[in-house]
Image 1: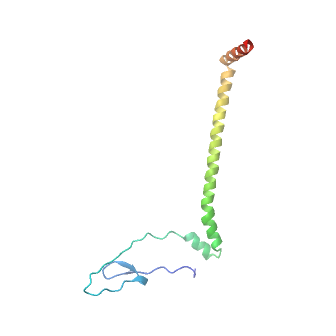
Image 2: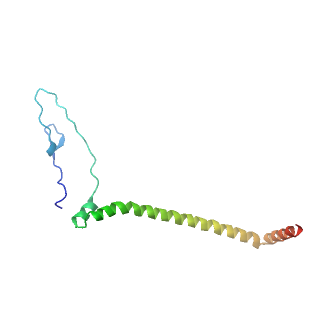
Image 3: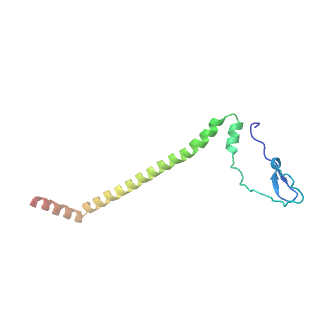
Length: 124
């Protein structure tokens, strides 16, 4: 943990605003108007995983692997899920087609249709 940077100290100025201690503004002369620039930043991203990986002696390789392979794994799993969904849709469509054809041929209407098709072929 010695290699991590120190947390920046924040102090409250006499006028009630907050500033970093290492960048405390100098006091302007009494006659000059005072201009205060206050910058509000979002909190830095959570680096808990990186700190644990670096602190346990694993090194930058684990951090790089987590940063690189994490989104890559999500992308691969998404592509696999999309392919499986497409295959499932094709299986349902083909099964519906087969059932429809079998039902139309298997009944009495299907037998009459098959007979008329045979007769039409013989006439040619």
